Structure formats: structure tokens, C-alpha cells
Image (tube, rainbow, N blue to C red; front, side, top):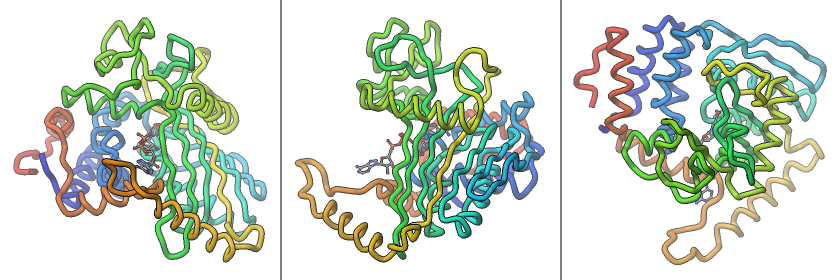
Length: 350
Ligand code: NAD
């Protein structure tokens, strides 16, 4: 069903407010989720509502938590998200890092124990839109792993996202924001909901045999996601685990740590001022020349044009802001189930 994003934000805000979340946090979470849909990432959009609601009711997600500063020493910030909404504590922590980078030129910020941060690119964009660059390594814990190590059969990690943002003058930043699994887990959830096959090379079954059946992730005997780019994607996923997890979060996916069935993100984020070497103008000129060079590529047959990271999201947002957001039937039914439990009207939403 097609629904306009402004209407959807109001509806999602109502759901979270009725779940005991403050008006401002409900609005922030709704805005983040709907913007993930607008930017083409349905995997991290409103389809997450049932999981968030479930975690709220089980006490895994603290609806009232704000960030707690554990260490504040010059360019170094360590922040505990206290199991609050990732969309709230992630934004608060990034705001702190942005304020600090104005003084220090570079910031190393650790954020631990955030409930699902959603689309990591949104925190990178917060930096990019303020004129700063960022590099983020994130791990995902709190539940059983779902992604195999390269060459292995059983899952050892989750979809560990990596994000790097390069700011531009008066233009949207370059945003590389990606899961280190072959695809994000949410994309398999969406394929499963739609009754579609997963992309080739994205999944293995319980014997490690490649499959395109998304059910292997949700039913016994369980299969797993594979890393993107074979050993290289696996290597980056492991670095996210070690830096985002072991360093910033102090917990990784290894089995001595809790797996209570929730979604926790730990993130190590570096934020930098492009004028750190006193060469902001030179940097900006060189970035623009290089991007123009990339854009001048002759597209391969069947491709309309060559893009840089971040552009597909801008295009999706332009299109979906006009047409509305298309939510598949199963995802919508699962959201309505939550809304109805909270006595929220779901008729006439389309
Ligand atoms: P994706 O594969 O759709 O895109 C990855 C990157 O490639 C993006 O930066 C995009 O702009 C770029 N890109 C895509 N097509 C391109 C093209 N034709 N030319 C140039 N660049 C192109 O994204 P994904 O890996 O499926 O991840 C989706 C989202 O899931 C991300 O926002 C990520 O942060 C999020 N995620 C979150 C978690 C979490 O635990 N919070 C875990 C995994 C993923």
C-alpha cells in the first residue's frame, strides 16, 4: 500500500507515544524510520516497529533513556546509550561529537549499548551536513549471530555496518553506508514478507550450501547470511566487531556475552574537520574534481548513469517524497497488529 511520508510519520509517532515513549522521542524515532523508507532502505524503516515494540514490552529497550557520558577527555568521548532508542541516543551522541570537533578538529567517539541505531548513514549525514567527515564501525549484539565468517559454516557475527561520510561545500555529502553482510538482514526480512527470493550469493543453508530461500533465516534448521565480497567484506565485518564491539562497546558476538533476543549496536565513530590540515579549500576543489571525473564515466550497457555513494538515497527520497512509500502487505499487517493492540485506528491509512 502507498502512503505519504508525512502521514506515516504521524501514524508511527502515535504508535510509539501510545507505547509510553515521550512525544519528542516518539517523533524522533518515527522521523528516522520513515526517512529510512524514503531513502530506499525499507529494511531499516517502519518494518522495524514490531521488533521495537517487542523489545519495549520485554524491557530490552528503555524508552526514557538518554546518553550517559562515561569519558570526556579532549578529543575522546565515551558514551553509554543505556539501551535507549538508537535513534535518540545516536543523535545525541553525534551532536556531542560535532560540538567537540569544533574545538579539537578530530574526535574519537565510542557509543555503547544503544538499542538498534537504524540507518547508520543518518549519523554520518548529521556530521556531513554540519561540514564534517566521519568514519563509523558498528557491531550488532544482543541476539544470536547470523553471518558466517569467510570459509565457515556457522554464523559468528551479524550484519556489522560500516559508514564513511565525506562533506562537500553547499552540496549533500558523499555517504558510503553499508552492511558488511552480502545484504542487510532487513532486506531478507522484506524478501521473506513479500514471498520473493533473496539475491544470489547472499545466503547459505545450515550446511553452508548457497541458497536464495529467505526462510532459512527465520526457520529451523537455520542458515546464515554471507559477508559481501568474500574475505574482504568478512575482514571489514571483523574490524567492525573488534573496534565497534570490543573497543567502544566492550562486548562482541562471542558466546560469553548475553544473547537475550534484543538488538544492541555499539559504534566507534571518528569525526573530522576537513580543515584539520588547513587545506579545506584544496580538499573541496579536489573532491569536486574527482567526483566530476567519476560522473563523466560512460555508463556500462544497461546502466543509466554512474553514481557516487549516497546518490541512490537522494534519488529514492526525491521519488518517494512525491509518490509516497510503498509498504508490502505483510509488513503493513504486522505494523497494524501493534497499532491495534494500542487501540490505534488503522483504517483509511492508504
Ligand atoms: P546498499 O547496498 O543499498 O548501499 C550501500 C552503499 O552503496 C550506500 O552508501 C549506497 O549509497 C551505495 N550505492 C548503492 N548503489 C550504488 C550505485 N549504483 N552507485 C554508487 N553507490 C551505490 O545498503 P545495505 O548494505 O543494504 O545497507 C542498508 C542500510 O542498513 C544502511 O543504512 C546500514 O546502515 C543499515 N544497517 C544497519 C544495521 C544496524 O545494526 N543498525 C546493520 C546493517 C545495516
